[in-house]
Amino acid sequence: SNSSRHRGKLAPGPYPFPIIGNILQLGRKPHQSLAKLSKTYGPLMSLQLGSIYTVVVSSPEIAKEVLQKHDHALSGRTIGAAAQVHNHHNISMAYLPVGDQWRKIRKLCKEQMFSIHRLEASQSLRQEKLKQLCDYVRECCCVKGRVVDIGEAAFITSLNLMSATLYSEDFTSFDSESTTQEWRETIRGVVKTVGAPNFADFFPVLKRFDPQGIKQEAEFYFGKLLDMFEDVINQRLHSRNTASPNPPPKKNDLLEALLDLGEGSEDDFYSCNHIKHLLLDLFTAGSHSTSSTVEWVMTELLLSPTKMSRAKNELRIVVGENKQVEESDISRLPYLQAVIKEVLRFHPAGPLLIPHKSEADVEINGYTIPKNTQILVNVWAMGRQSSLWSSPNSFEPERFLENKVVDFKGQDFELIPFGSGRRMCPGLPLANRMLHIMVASLIQNFDWELEPGTKPEDVDTTEKFGLALHKAVPLKALPVFNYKTK
Ligand code: HEM
Image (cartoon, rainbow, N blue to C red; front, side, top):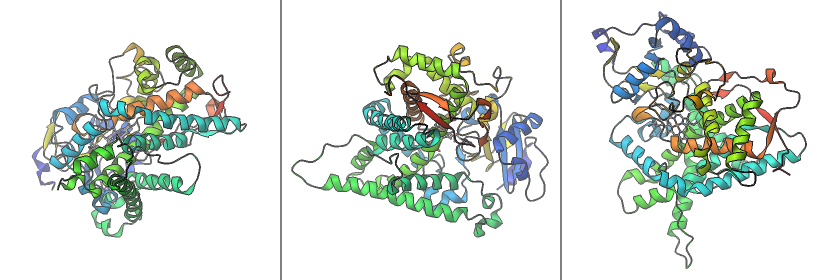
């Protein structure tokens, strides 16, 4: 497959060792190691990861070439062993190559789920889930000194906001009751197996042996989650088909729309099998990315009390003291928006996007990217370049008040936490609402303090690399009474 490589000059990069290539240079935090290497080898850099030839992009100019100018040829996916279980890669929006089937799923999501019309219609369902979050935190307030694990609370809330949006149901509650715990653990399992570096992906001879057991684990968690979604779908089919004198009102959600479209259609596309793989993709792509972003927002605000009060004041002035913040308020909260943008610059949940693959030879800046190259776009590195940002290593939401035009919707290549071009995150419109409204609810209703006994300088802000970039140490924060919690 690499026979075309001799045709052009390859991008520069560190010298590869035999067989392993540059794998050891990735270390435990690949986004950071790669950022460092690109300072030596430039914004388009070659690496040999075992048998996988990889290029790493670390500047907005090259990112634009890759994600905009050549996005047709460069929007394939490399598919690890974990994503191939239960035939997922042949059905999944996240892994299908750019083609008719993929386009059809993207279009469906855009129209049936993430359109303004649909999101407005499902807003009250999400408002209900935010109330549950606030009730939970209030309960923690009442038990003196009980800290909240912000990442976990945001994870549960993200799952609830998504299940409300996709199929109008509660997903999981804050208690540790076994069924809700099971949903959480299963989603975590899927996310973990897809995000874990698997040696078998880099060394084809190992594929059969599954040396780390990742494929086996993926088989289990994917299977379990697919079964759980199948139950959800069957329950809905059952209630749709039960003739009753007073049928319940029709639901206004993605699941209902898909089943309506599938009615009488022979198209495989609306089969239970396809719907459950779609739900799996949406939940695994959307939950940890959103909750870890919320955790970083709260961490940064707790470490900068003046910025925390500025955000709280804005809510007090714009929304008022006696009204709960709603999604429709977001556009009138410029400081909150700047805070979220700044976190997406500083701690992007997908520091290397999701790996792309070239479907043909492409030439960029005089270098050839041969067919079947894996492409990583290091948005983390771009967010921290001093040539692009002043004081890139400090958390300064104010920079986005001065420069209001830079946005993360895929047009400004220095800030692309959701990617850009045809493979860009389809969930952005929902993610955007969830992020703002979750943070706004947490800071409008509560004052927050660090876990008792913790000083700001003790807060560990190191990152843990996985499918989503997490805080290595969970943020535990103490909600305290304010006028609203009484
Ligand atoms: C803070 C929140 C989020 C961030 C930072 C984020 C970021 C990303 C990134 C970087 C990609 C890969 C783009 C590429 O390959 O070039 C992606 C893909 C994707 N995201 Fe998100 N995302 C978020 C939330 C969501 C939500 C809430 C959903 C769904 C409800 C979602 C669904 C997806 C799917 C299905 C894909 C794969 C699309 C494809 O391959 O065609 N994401 N996201």
